[in-house]
Image 1 (cartoon, one colour):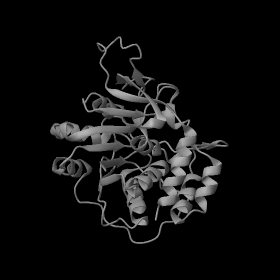
Image 2 (cartoon, helix red, strand yellow):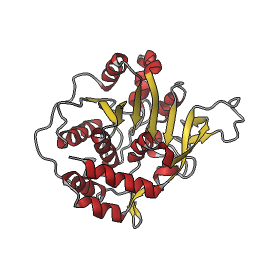
Image 3 (cartoon, rainbow, N blue to C red):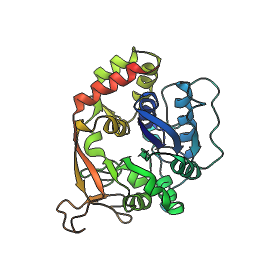
Length: 304
């Protein structure tokens, strides 16, 4: 079983990733932390609690609220994609559990340092909490197995022609994370735009069980969709964790642009020419989209 912390900004695709993670027996979700990203951090925290509560795990999986804004850059949300609440499309019921009184950084530090084995950090929002954690508690780096981060692109961005949303939201935090020395898997748009949840998959999960209905209703409300399906970007981090064999990766050095028109761009040293052959990330370049859909349906079918 892999111990993970999910640092997230629900967001529809974050909600789907969280749903899979907390229901998969191969993953032990030790903590969920939230960050301003898709919507403000008060909303991302409520949304994380909604998902955890939906699956009856409100007393098992703690949630800690994190950064309210990027380190330097002005905050810009993605409510145009995820709706004003961040999770439009489904009405959740029941009284929500309370988040921890600790901040996300405090909770991450405590959980990481107390663990008897290395923890994998799954980052599916902006990386502000991660950067703050490393700045305040650099000793945690030695206790992390790796970071599996949704974000970045080697091709075409979705905020500008160069930049993907999570990196663009807080490029200075992204730069700190990629310079941290912690092993990183970059799960970017190069794969997430290929692994669409298809209309056929959505039709199947809608009638599987209550979880399938909930996820269906959220996903069809996502503004990032077309006739071929919906890009569930963040779910790809969990897919990679459980089935790396279905992704093609390459070790590269990733630099982050933090100013100018290319702000938020993830630049890869594809020739190994500028960092003495060193690399700082396993970059996902390709994915088996059919396997992704089959896996996603199987995961939803198992949900209680």
